[in-house]
Image (cartoon, rainbow, N blue to C red):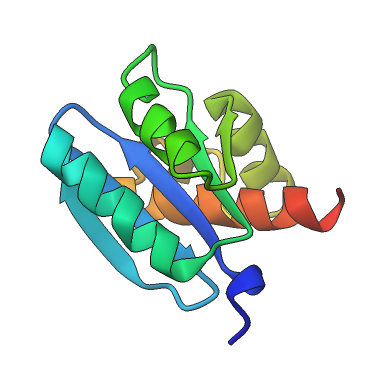
Length: 121
């Protein structure tokens, strides 16, 4: 698979980073610590992704985003509402299902959003 065809979604929670890689669907988690963020950045550098989408989550995302930018990785910070609207419009989830999604599902939605966004740029 071409490295440029990889898209990544990252969900930042207080304790962990949930990551989904598209199109493989590979799921990974890293601790939301300085060591975990560095490990995430190192891992993503080996993938050479075309885009990495990170949800804007009230500031918790900035250490992750800063590390990815420092590593010169193609990161985009997205509005969670915009991602949910995309998922609903695409028919990937129903409105009711968006209330019970897990971090892994959300990371997958972010990766899909990044893939679609980059395809139009």
